[in-house]
Image (cartoon, rainbow, N blue to C red; front, side):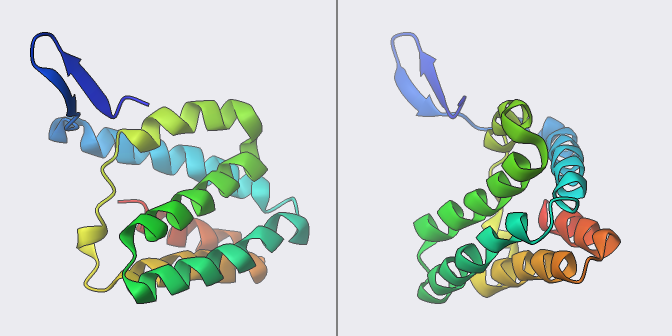
Length: 142
């Protein structure tokens, strides 16, 4: 996944993404997920049923401050969008992009802000408001 870097005679370290390309990576991720979200909108309630359980677990993890679970449910949320809207081929493109982002949870004062961003995406999808869902998704990916 590109998260670790092996250095000869030094061992293995966690890769630090180049900050100069962060805006490019964010833009790529937004394009990939926006494409998938548009496709997901055509799938109806079946594709949306996943989000009820995911958001419930996400909310509980945020309230407990369990960062490992927050990341797990966050990634599952976005991966579901990709899988439902684009399938395995799009997942194969998305995974290296998302792993090159160090997810900035520190931008939130409270982890519940992250939960609320995800809940807003789902609420817009349930209202069948594709434009709002896309805007909420775009705001979430930073």
